[in-house]
Amino acid sequence: MNEQAPIAVAPAPAPAGPPGMAPFVPKPPLWNMVYVISSIVLGITQGLGLNLVTANLTGLQASFGATATEMAWLPTVYFATNMTGTIVMFKIRSQFGMRRFAELGIIVYALIVLAHLFAHDLQSAIWVRAIMGIAAAPLSTLAFFYMLEWLPPAKKLTIGLCFGMLGSSLSLPLARIISPDLLAMGDWQGLYMVEAGLALVSLAIVFLVPLVPPPRAKVFDKDDIISLPLMAAGFACIAIVLGMGRVYWWLEAPWIGVLLAVGIGSLVLFCLVELHRKNPIIDLRWLFGRDMLIFAGSLIVIRLLLSEQSVGVFGLFSVLNLQNDQLIGLFSIVGVATFAATAGLSMVMKPARVPLFHLTALVLIAIAAWMDSQSTVLSRPEQFFVSQALIGMATGLFLPPAMLHGFLRALARGPQYILSFLTVFLTSQTLGGLLGSAIFGSFVTLREQFHSNVIAQGITLLDPLVAQRIQAYGGAYARVLTDPAQRDARGLALLGQSATQQANVLAYNDLFFLIFAASLAAIAVLLTHLALAALSKPAAPLQAQPA
Image 1: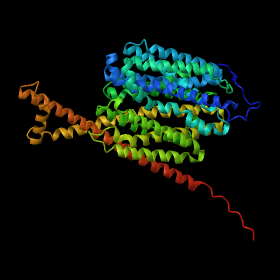
Image 2: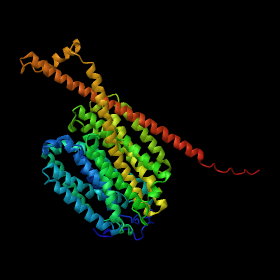
Image 3: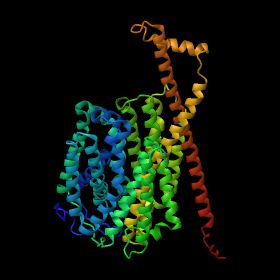
Image 4: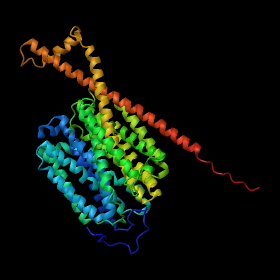
């Protein structure tokens, strides 16, 4: 990849965009489409690297001969390394330039993806996924820069921000749509072959489609030798605790408490080091300011509520024994809704409208959660078309305005604050997702136990309806079991399974209602904040009218 684009350009470049970005160089219309496609492909490659495995953990169990608990390590270790990897890659890009950053990053990613094809046991697969969390870090940044490359400065922070994250947003429904055919083609190797193919396509994009290099800056110094390991250890330990705590259960495995203590201790030491550095990785004094704390908190809350789909609906589908091949229509609608929201947002997004978009996203989440709280054991994907389309739209309306708001605040302080903002944004999104899985998953477990106890108390063999149901279930085995006692035993077991399924559905309904209530609370807080801001804003002075 050359530093300068080997294409015909206008003789005089347009004015530069915001500080820290590459100067704008107009390009022919055909190349504009090339940059759009390149950005979406890179975003989808990064997103599928995570979501293809996450969407097929149950199907991959047999391939690796592992339990559900052991398989949960695959997405957890990816998150554990991805946060630090993204920050380190951003620093490499800033200091050594876009060319080295892109070529080195994409080569390493392609090699790691190819290594998946040789990981035939779970332990080696876990190590490869952990390394992939770091190797995949350049892709999201590259997708963002390729989308910005062809846009004039006035549209970089509207169309660029919206569509720069489109590929990664579409990867979640896309992973669910293509997974059935991939597993049918080659089991787990079918998934990894697609990842390897996309990685090689991304490699070709980086070497053939040029980027105008942004300004370089010296961002590494000797103090990073202390700060980066502390940050990596802290983020990794917290991610593992949140990802695996619910699986092993919080108070049952002593190592969870040890990891939590190590994670908190590492982050405290990291903060102490950063506060005394001349050029810190993260400007903690700025981040601990009132406005940034409110901003980070709102990001985490909305990301937590968006777990209604990834934790709530996906978990409910698992309880209802619905597989990915039965959900293709649903996720096609989710993908279309996400794209439509992104396209519409790109035409109307302005900094002053950010609270309105977030308010709209919260309203959509509340409506979807209330609709899903009416689920039953007979619910099928068709009943979730509208609610999950609303969640897809909420996702499209949430991320770009949040990125715009934080990005402008960082640029107002100086280009050196972009890394601090990037850390807040990525950490809030990753931790929000992990917190959603940990909190909501634990909530469902506790509510399922409650509903199971309530249902079990109402089941007695003296009840003629219960006895009739047991006989009906046992009747299914009449051709293979001639002993009535054995048939009744099988019928009682099936009744227990049915009761457990019903308890799980009720637990997920409780979760959806909790998200509905939390969304209403968030709406009330946001409206109160906007009202107080409007009241505290000084009124414009009245001008005297001429006589």
